[in-house]
Length: 341
Image (cartoon, rainbow, N blue to C red; front, side):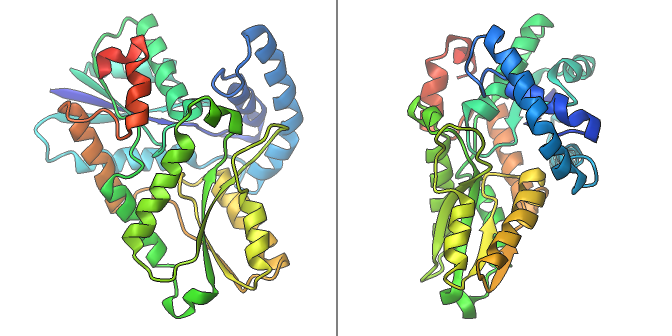
Protein backbone atom coordinates (compact mmCIF):
# COMPACT_ATOMS: atom_id res chain seq x y z
CA UNK A 1 0.00 0.00 0.00
CA UNK A 2 1.13 3.54 -0.72
CA UNK A 3 1.72 5.60 2.43
CA UNK A 4 2.37 9.35 2.56
CA UNK A 5 4.43 10.77 5.43
CA UNK A 6 3.81 14.48 5.99
CA UNK A 7 6.79 16.22 7.59
CA UNK A 8 5.81 19.42 9.41
CA UNK A 9 8.19 22.24 10.24
CA UNK A 10 7.98 25.98 10.78
CA UNK A 11 9.74 27.01 7.59
CA UNK A 12 11.87 30.06 6.95
CA UNK A 13 12.23 32.84 4.38
CA UNK A 14 13.91 31.83 1.13
CA UNK A 15 15.05 35.40 0.42
CA UNK A 16 15.40 38.70 2.26
CA UNK A 17 12.23 39.91 0.51
CA UNK A 18 10.36 36.99 2.08
CA UNK A 19 11.33 37.91 5.66
CA UNK A 20 8.44 40.28 6.41
CA UNK A 21 5.67 38.10 4.91
CA UNK A 22 7.17 35.09 6.72
CA UNK A 23 6.98 36.99 10.02
CA UNK A 24 3.42 38.03 9.25
CA UNK A 25 2.42 34.39 8.69
CA UNK A 26 4.05 33.50 12.00
CA UNK A 27 2.33 36.16 14.09
CA UNK A 28 -1.00 35.81 12.29
CA UNK A 29 -1.26 32.21 13.52
CA UNK A 30 -3.98 32.06 16.22
CA UNK A 31 -1.84 29.48 18.05
CA UNK A 32 0.80 32.19 18.46
CA UNK A 33 -1.40 35.23 19.11
CA UNK A 34 -4.73 34.15 20.60
CA UNK A 35 -6.91 37.04 19.45
CA UNK A 36 -9.91 37.32 17.11
CA UNK A 37 -8.92 37.73 13.45
CA UNK A 38 -9.95 41.40 13.28
CA UNK A 39 -7.45 42.16 16.07
CA UNK A 40 -4.75 39.60 15.28
CA UNK A 41 -4.36 40.55 11.59
CA UNK A 42 -3.42 44.23 12.08
CA UNK A 43 -1.27 43.34 15.09
CA UNK A 44 0.62 40.73 13.03
CA UNK A 45 1.11 43.35 10.31
CA UNK A 46 2.54 45.80 12.83
CA UNK A 47 4.85 43.29 14.55
CA UNK A 48 6.17 41.85 11.28
CA UNK A 49 6.88 45.30 9.88
CA UNK A 50 8.75 46.37 13.03
CA UNK A 51 10.74 43.14 13.36
CA UNK A 52 11.60 42.78 9.67
CA UNK A 53 14.75 44.98 9.68
CA UNK A 54 16.26 43.04 12.61
CA UNK A 55 15.29 39.71 11.10
CA UNK A 56 16.75 40.67 7.71
CA UNK A 57 20.04 41.35 9.46
CA UNK A 58 19.91 37.87 11.00
CA UNK A 59 19.17 36.16 7.69
CA UNK A 60 21.86 38.23 5.97
CA UNK A 61 24.36 36.49 8.24
CA UNK A 62 22.98 33.16 6.95
CA UNK A 63 23.48 34.01 3.29
CA UNK A 64 20.15 35.76 2.78
CA UNK A 65 17.82 32.86 3.51
CA UNK A 66 16.96 30.06 5.92
CA UNK A 67 18.47 26.59 5.28
CA UNK A 68 15.52 24.83 6.92
CA UNK A 69 13.82 23.65 3.71
CA UNK A 70 16.99 22.06 2.36
CA UNK A 71 17.64 20.40 5.71
CA UNK A 72 14.07 19.12 5.92
CA UNK A 73 14.38 17.74 2.39
CA UNK A 74 17.54 15.90 3.41
CA UNK A 75 15.60 14.39 6.32
CA UNK A 76 12.77 13.40 3.98
CA UNK A 77 15.26 11.70 1.64
CA UNK A 78 16.92 9.87 4.53
CA UNK A 79 13.56 8.67 5.90
CA UNK A 80 12.46 7.39 2.49
CA UNK A 81 15.75 5.55 2.10
CA UNK A 82 15.40 3.94 5.54
CA UNK A 83 11.87 2.75 4.70
CA UNK A 84 12.77 1.11 1.39
CA UNK A 85 13.11 -2.30 2.99
CA UNK A 86 9.45 -2.23 4.10
CA UNK A 87 6.74 -3.95 2.07
CA UNK A 88 4.72 -0.73 1.75
CA UNK A 89 5.69 2.20 -0.48
CA UNK A 90 6.45 5.30 1.58
CA UNK A 91 6.85 8.81 0.21
CA UNK A 92 7.64 11.91 2.28
CA UNK A 93 6.03 15.30 1.69
CA UNK A 94 7.01 18.58 3.35
CA UNK A 95 4.63 21.16 4.82
CA UNK A 96 5.92 24.41 6.30
CA UNK A 97 3.61 26.34 8.60
CA UNK A 98 4.81 29.88 7.86
CA UNK A 99 6.45 29.67 4.44
CA UNK A 100 6.67 27.48 1.36
CA UNK A 101 5.68 24.77 0.72
CA UNK A 102 2.38 25.39 2.50
CA UNK A 103 -0.27 22.76 3.19
CA UNK A 104 -2.48 23.97 0.33
CA UNK A 105 0.37 23.32 -2.12
CA UNK A 106 1.56 20.00 -0.70
CA UNK A 107 -1.89 18.44 -0.48
CA UNK A 108 -2.18 18.55 -4.29
CA UNK A 109 0.98 16.42 -4.56
CA UNK A 110 -0.34 14.03 -1.93
CA UNK A 111 -3.60 13.58 -3.86
CA UNK A 112 -1.61 12.83 -7.03
CA UNK A 113 0.36 10.18 -5.13
CA UNK A 114 -2.99 8.72 -4.02
CA UNK A 115 -1.89 7.00 -0.79
CA UNK A 116 -3.94 4.49 1.15
CA UNK A 117 -2.72 5.97 4.41
CA UNK A 118 -1.31 9.32 5.58
CA UNK A 119 1.03 9.67 8.57
CA UNK A 120 1.52 13.10 10.09
CA UNK A 121 5.02 13.64 11.53
CA UNK A 122 5.88 17.01 13.11
CA UNK A 123 9.63 17.64 13.22
CA UNK A 124 9.24 18.92 16.78
CA UNK A 125 10.22 16.23 19.32
CA UNK A 126 8.22 17.96 22.07
CA UNK A 127 4.58 18.86 21.47
CA UNK A 128 3.29 22.41 21.72
CA UNK A 129 0.02 23.86 20.48
CA UNK A 130 2.08 26.64 18.88
CA UNK A 131 4.11 24.23 16.73
CA UNK A 132 2.90 20.65 16.20
CA UNK A 133 -0.66 21.46 17.19
CA UNK A 134 -0.90 24.40 14.80
CA UNK A 135 0.54 22.40 11.88
CA UNK A 136 -1.68 19.38 12.48
CA UNK A 137 -4.81 21.52 12.75
CA UNK A 138 -3.97 23.41 9.55
CA UNK A 139 -3.44 20.15 7.67
CA UNK A 140 -6.75 18.70 8.85
CA UNK A 141 -8.55 21.92 7.87
CA UNK A 142 -7.03 21.79 4.37
CA UNK A 143 -7.93 18.09 4.04
CA UNK A 144 -11.54 18.94 4.84
CA UNK A 145 -11.61 21.70 2.22
CA UNK A 146 -9.95 19.46 -0.39
CA UNK A 147 -12.22 16.52 0.51
CA UNK A 148 -9.24 14.28 1.29
CA UNK A 149 -10.58 11.50 3.52
CA UNK A 150 -7.64 9.10 3.47
CA UNK A 151 -6.97 7.13 6.68
CA UNK A 152 -4.69 9.34 8.78
CA UNK A 153 -2.38 8.55 11.69
CA UNK A 154 -0.83 11.24 13.89
CA UNK A 155 2.58 11.10 15.55
CA UNK A 156 2.11 13.69 18.24
CA UNK A 157 5.62 13.79 19.73
CA UNK A 158 8.67 11.69 20.64
CA UNK A 159 10.48 13.45 23.52
CA UNK A 160 11.86 10.21 25.02
CA UNK A 161 12.03 7.93 22.00
CA UNK A 162 15.13 5.80 22.58
CA UNK A 163 16.90 6.48 19.27
CA UNK A 164 16.16 10.20 19.47
CA UNK A 165 17.79 10.26 22.91
CA UNK A 166 20.68 8.15 21.59
CA UNK A 167 21.24 10.51 18.66
CA UNK A 168 21.71 13.59 20.85
CA UNK A 169 23.63 11.59 23.44
CA UNK A 170 26.19 10.58 20.80
CA UNK A 171 26.58 14.16 19.56
CA UNK A 172 27.06 15.44 23.11
CA UNK A 173 29.67 12.82 23.96
CA UNK A 174 31.71 13.91 20.95
CA UNK A 175 32.03 17.40 22.47
CA UNK A 176 32.66 16.61 26.15
CA UNK A 177 36.26 16.46 27.37
CA UNK A 178 36.02 14.19 30.42
CA UNK A 179 39.32 15.39 31.83
CA UNK A 180 37.83 18.89 32.07
CA UNK A 181 34.39 17.87 33.33
CA UNK A 182 34.69 19.92 36.53
CA UNK A 183 35.31 23.01 34.37
CA UNK A 184 32.32 22.39 32.11
CA UNK A 185 28.66 23.45 32.15
CA UNK A 186 26.34 21.63 29.75
CA UNK A 187 23.45 23.92 28.80
CA UNK A 188 20.39 22.35 27.20
CA UNK A 189 18.71 25.16 25.27
CA UNK A 190 15.14 24.91 23.98
CA UNK A 191 12.98 27.49 22.23
CA UNK A 192 11.00 29.43 24.81
CA UNK A 193 7.25 29.81 25.19
CA UNK A 194 5.14 32.39 27.04
CA UNK A 195 4.40 31.23 30.57
CA UNK A 196 0.66 31.70 30.11
CA UNK A 197 0.65 28.99 27.41
CA UNK A 198 2.04 26.50 29.91
CA UNK A 199 -0.53 27.54 32.52
CA UNK A 200 -3.24 26.88 29.93
CA UNK A 201 -2.09 23.25 29.72
CA UNK A 202 0.50 23.20 26.94
CA UNK A 203 2.73 20.15 27.64
CA UNK A 204 5.83 21.59 25.94
CA UNK A 205 7.87 22.49 29.03
CA UNK A 206 7.25 19.17 30.77
CA UNK A 207 8.24 17.30 27.60
CA UNK A 208 11.46 19.30 27.20
CA UNK A 209 12.28 18.51 30.82
CA UNK A 210 11.62 14.81 30.20
CA UNK A 211 13.93 14.86 27.16
CA UNK A 212 16.71 16.39 29.24
CA UNK A 213 16.13 13.87 32.04
CA UNK A 214 16.34 11.00 29.55
CA UNK A 215 19.49 12.43 27.97
CA UNK A 216 21.30 12.92 31.28
CA UNK A 217 20.36 9.40 32.34
CA UNK A 218 21.62 7.97 29.06
CA UNK A 219 24.86 9.99 29.17
CA UNK A 220 25.52 8.55 32.65
CA UNK A 221 28.44 10.91 33.35
CA UNK A 222 29.19 11.23 37.08
CA UNK A 223 29.51 14.82 38.24
CA UNK A 224 27.95 16.28 35.08
CA UNK A 225 26.96 19.92 35.65
CA UNK A 226 23.95 20.72 33.46
CA UNK A 227 21.21 23.34 33.19
CA UNK A 228 18.03 23.51 31.11
CA UNK A 229 17.27 26.96 29.72
CA UNK A 230 15.10 28.62 27.07
CA UNK A 231 16.05 30.97 24.23
CA UNK A 232 14.49 33.32 21.66
CA UNK A 233 12.32 35.30 24.09
CA UNK A 234 10.41 38.18 22.44
CA UNK A 235 7.70 40.62 23.48
CA UNK A 236 6.47 41.88 26.84
CA UNK A 237 4.95 38.64 28.16
CA UNK A 238 6.66 36.58 30.84
CA UNK A 239 8.35 33.54 29.29
CA UNK A 240 9.40 30.24 30.81
CA UNK A 241 12.95 30.26 32.08
CA UNK A 242 15.68 30.52 32.93
CA UNK A 243 16.75 32.27 29.74
CA UNK A 244 19.74 30.83 27.89
CA UNK A 245 21.53 34.17 27.61
CA UNK A 246 21.32 34.75 31.38
CA UNK A 247 22.60 31.24 32.10
CA UNK A 248 25.50 31.67 29.68
CA UNK A 249 26.46 34.95 31.34
CA UNK A 250 26.39 33.44 34.84
CA UNK A 251 28.31 30.28 33.92
CA UNK A 252 30.87 32.16 31.81
CA UNK A 253 31.67 34.42 34.75
CA UNK A 254 32.66 31.26 36.63
CA UNK A 255 35.32 30.71 33.94
CA UNK A 256 33.53 27.62 32.68
CA UNK A 257 33.70 25.72 29.40
CA UNK A 258 30.22 26.22 27.94
CA UNK A 259 28.67 23.41 25.88
CA UNK A 260 25.25 24.27 24.42
CA UNK A 261 22.82 21.58 23.21
CA UNK A 262 19.83 22.75 21.06
CA UNK A 263 17.68 20.05 22.61
CA UNK A 264 14.34 21.00 21.00
CA UNK A 265 15.67 21.60 17.47
CA UNK A 266 16.26 18.89 14.87
CA UNK A 267 17.60 21.11 12.06
CA UNK A 268 19.76 24.20 11.77
CA UNK A 269 18.15 27.61 11.35
CA UNK A 270 18.38 31.17 12.71
CA UNK A 271 18.06 30.14 16.37
CA UNK A 272 21.09 27.85 16.08
CA UNK A 273 23.25 29.38 13.36
CA UNK A 274 22.93 32.99 14.52
CA UNK A 275 21.53 33.11 18.05
CA UNK A 276 23.59 30.21 19.42
CA UNK A 277 26.63 30.27 17.15
CA UNK A 278 27.20 34.02 16.89
CA UNK A 279 25.31 35.98 19.53
CA UNK A 280 25.66 33.59 22.48
CA UNK A 281 29.23 32.66 21.57
CA UNK A 282 30.15 36.34 21.76
CA UNK A 283 28.26 36.66 25.04
CA UNK A 284 30.19 33.76 26.54
CA UNK A 285 33.56 35.15 25.52
CA UNK A 286 32.71 38.63 26.80
CA UNK A 287 31.83 37.16 30.19
CA UNK A 288 34.94 35.06 30.64
CA UNK A 289 34.16 31.54 29.47
CA UNK A 290 37.18 29.31 28.85
CA UNK A 291 35.61 27.91 25.71
CA UNK A 292 32.25 27.95 23.94
CA UNK A 293 31.11 24.77 22.16
CA UNK A 294 27.83 24.17 20.38
CA UNK A 295 26.52 20.65 19.76
CA UNK A 296 24.98 20.37 16.25
CA UNK A 297 21.33 19.48 15.69
CA UNK A 298 20.53 15.85 14.94
CA UNK A 299 19.36 16.57 11.34
CA UNK A 300 20.16 13.28 9.53
CA UNK A 301 22.16 11.56 12.29
CA UNK A 302 21.50 7.86 11.71
CA UNK A 303 19.92 7.18 15.10
CA UNK A 304 17.57 10.14 14.70
CA UNK A 305 16.41 8.87 11.32
CA UNK A 306 15.92 5.44 12.91
CA UNK A 307 13.82 7.16 15.59
CA UNK A 308 11.57 8.74 12.99
CA UNK A 309 11.35 5.47 11.08
CA UNK A 310 10.28 3.62 14.24
CA UNK A 311 7.62 6.24 14.98
CA UNK A 312 6.29 6.05 11.41
CA UNK A 313 6.05 2.26 11.43
CA UNK A 314 4.41 2.19 14.86
CA UNK A 315 1.87 4.82 13.87
CA UNK A 316 1.15 3.10 10.57
CA UNK A 317 0.34 -0.15 12.40
CA UNK A 318 -1.82 1.68 14.92
CA UNK A 319 0.52 0.76 17.79
CA UNK A 320 1.06 4.35 18.90
CA UNK A 321 -0.23 7.73 17.86
CA UNK A 322 1.43 9.71 20.61
CA UNK A 323 4.39 9.39 22.96
CA UNK A 324 2.89 11.56 25.66
CA UNK A 325 0.04 10.78 28.04
CA UNK A 326 -0.75 14.50 28.40
CA UNK A 327 -0.94 14.86 24.63
CA UNK A 328 -3.08 11.75 24.40
CA UNK A 329 -5.51 13.20 26.91
CA UNK A 330 -5.58 16.49 24.99
CA UNK A 331 -6.36 14.64 21.74
CA UNK A 332 -9.05 12.54 23.38
CA UNK A 333 -10.86 15.66 24.53
CA UNK A 334 -10.84 17.15 21.03
CA UNK A 335 -13.79 15.79 18.98
CA UNK A 336 -12.12 16.43 15.63
CA UNK A 337 -9.12 14.28 16.63
CA UNK A 338 -10.93 11.39 18.33
CA UNK A 339 -10.96 9.27 15.17
CA UNK A 340 -7.13 9.29 15.12
CA UNK A 341 -6.89 7.81 18.61
